[in-house]
Length: 219
Image 1 (cartoon, rainbow, N blue to C red):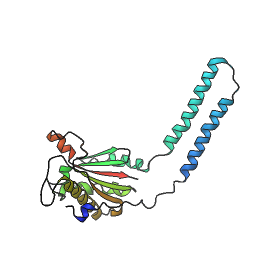
Image 2 (cartoon, helix red, strand yellow):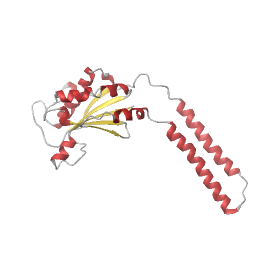
Image 3 (tube, rainbow, N blue to C red):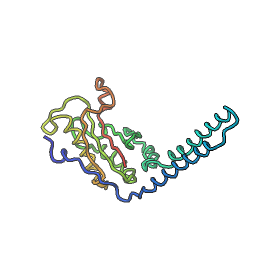
Image 4 (cartoon, rainbow, N blue to C red):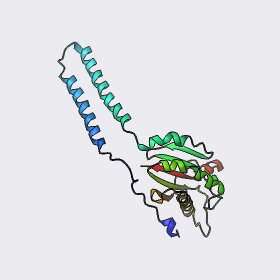
């Protein structure tokens, strides 16, 4: 049975100090009006010049529409984008950085953090996490610490299955980050056991890749 820590996922309130984003509504409204205006102007242009002129007008309309859309795409960026160069420069062996739809993921090899079948951080694992503190403190959003295992069953008094093991490891990482000054209110611990493999569990290399802890940084 899970203990109280393993059963409880830490809540993640909205980070303090985030700016008011109500300006986004006005920004989008202006761009929409601009697109409409340009298309109307082209539509009201007196016909003439034959098919070639009509084709030119259509290309102009498409180009004008594409321009505001490109402005919109580049003008609004997720806040975590600014963190990518800093994260990419961590250069810690066994730690990789990837960008996903939900945010940035820091993936740490399980072998760096824990002994086999245990959820007690090794000195090397503590050092790896401490090297991440500066970058984590620069990030203002939420941190989801997610434990993953391979599909080899485990059955010990402390860890009756891989569910307990994956949650226990996630909690161990959260607790260590908390001791290093990361606000616990920004974090949560999640265990996925072997339900989200990265590679096939049919090989030793695949199982090693699947044993990991991920820190998902999201707004």
